[in-house]
Image (tube, rainbow, N blue to C red; front, side, top):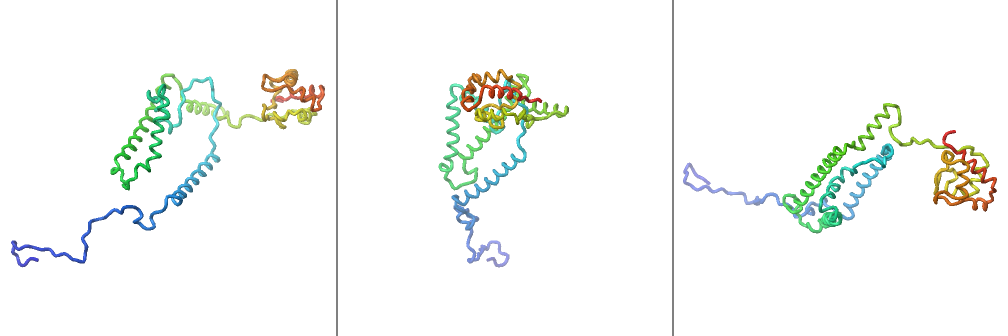
Length: 291
């Protein structure tokens, strides 16, 4: 303590012995130092993750049922198109174009590099066992993570620009834009904008005709179903648009291009007569889409 105004007198500060000297905040070694704030990974934490996953899955199912994907116009197999995967596969699509991931090195690119990458992800929890969770204190793991993110972004961007360059060089219009333009054009004309549910069901002609019983008795329902919509074989509704009576009789007796065996003998064995078979062929030739 100081007495008076003597500047040369030594000043001694006396602390309170009841207050312990602190070293600042000490980071606990792990989360077990927080009672009630930790839990077992299996089954507690994992069960919660599964429950969240189930809720998200149900949400997706409800969305797909409520808003199904629209059916556009049938694909044109003769069209020259440049295949393009969904955006989340673009980086892999571009990666497989690299010289050492395709051609003679396709095994290395598809199995070797991918196996190392995904194997590292699987082994990461076992290799990186440190308690430090701050990314700047984990240089190896953090560097690999940032390197992977940069590679994915770079490859995705390269794939998209390469695709646009290919389309411009060949003078093609992306398929999705073609569909949208065609849908808009049909909408302006009052025509259907998709191919979904546009096919009108063909009715059975003269359903009460005795030939219907001959059709069932001959065993035709095995391949063509009782409602003639087809089972193992094609539908016979509208078959009269493709074949006349003579053609159908020939198919019954001789079969059809290796796709259908001759059914004449089995029809006779089932109790049908030549007159019944002739009438059946005549009745089938009447099955036309437009009546």
